[in-house]
Length: 171
Image (cartoon, rainbow, N blue to C red; front, side):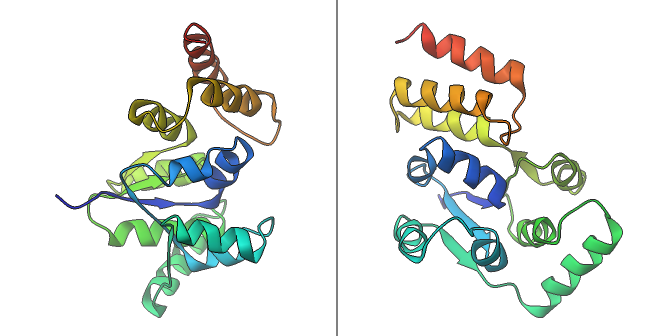
């Protein structure tokens, strides 16, 4: 059976990196891909060595052909509040059968779901890491606590707190 493909926007990847979980996520039994525009333009906080390390861990970067760039531009015009890079992730996800779109953007999530694309976010990724035993309970607990306290990480607070309490009982 082929490995499922996860198309990611950068918001989830940035959050997972803040929590020290990005490398662990890439160990999950999925193929992780993102459009080249997101990898090049939204990863400004990563240096060339860090980007190379992500590629070595299996992150795939896809260049969109002109027709998909045009479709992304159409979505950008159609959905005024959607960032252009989110549109690139959406059109890439549309091209991949039975993929998962990993995003923290509420509007992108809603549009993708309307198009029949399975959508998940950071908490799904942490749940998957826990289920696969890829990271320790303590590392997950610490990352979730950091996410809850970081004003630039937008996760459902109640769901995040529930996971923290559950993991606390295992520490």
